[in-house]
Each structure stands twice: as structure tokens, then as C-alpha cells.
Length: 159
Image (tube, rainbow, N blue to C red; front, side):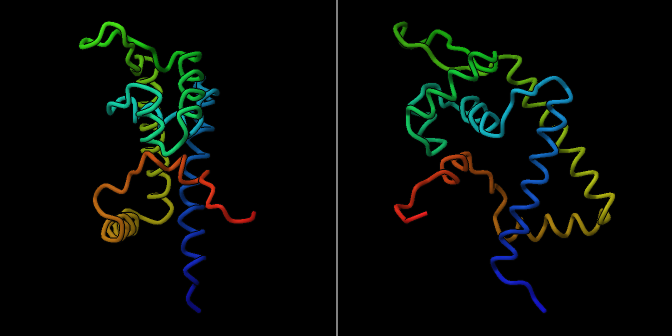
């Protein structure tokens, strides 16, 4: 019997969750137990040009206040800093620190290892077919940095 559309959505979510949980566990084992998935999204958005709380909030689809709280945490942990703006000396721009980039690279390496484990379980050809199908369905660049806001959004419906 074929699975339902809801089953497919839950399987895809479970796959995402499995990979992210595995990455968080390994990052913690490497000494980065203070990193959360939203921190990755935020650092990537900052590295891509979100250099203030308003812009980070827009890119993550969260409020400016939520972005500011995330920035404060990332600054406190040494993953981002505020540097001088070359155009406006009165303004401070957000920047990912070398430690922040180290954590991003470590996370990428961990995800590569987790992918390799999946490859060992189902075989190279099957994993490549899965990736090809997902790419055909989602496009070449399915990455959306607004996922934190999308997951937390209030649709105005009763819970």
C-alpha cells in the first residue's frame, strides 16, 4: 500500500531531524555544545550579507527582536562580532568570526560523514538516486535560510 502525502512529509522531516540531531551531537563532542541549528542559519545569513538585526530578521523570517537575541548569543559565544562599516563610520556591521567559520566548516564535515553513513546503509547508487529525485522535485538550490521563522510562524490558527 502506498504511503500518504503526510507520511512522505514526515519521512522527509525525520530525515532532516536525524541528520541535524547527529550533527549537533557530534559538534558537542568536538567542544561546540553551545551551537544550535538556528545559529547555523544565522551565521550563514550573516556571511551572505545580513549585517544587522533588521536584515538578519528578514532573511530568517523572524522579528528584529528575535534576530537581535540570536545576534547577542552568537556574539557572547564568539561566533559573530560587530566590525566597522567601511561606508559609514557610525555603523557597526555584523561579521562571522574565525571561530564562527570554524564551527560552520566542522558542521559541514560532520554532515559529509553522516551522508557517508547513509551511503553505507543504502548504497552509493541508491543515495545518488534519492538525491537526484529530491533535486528534480526541489531544484538545485533548495536551501532556505528563512526556515527558523517558517517553522515558528503563527498562522493565526488555534493550536
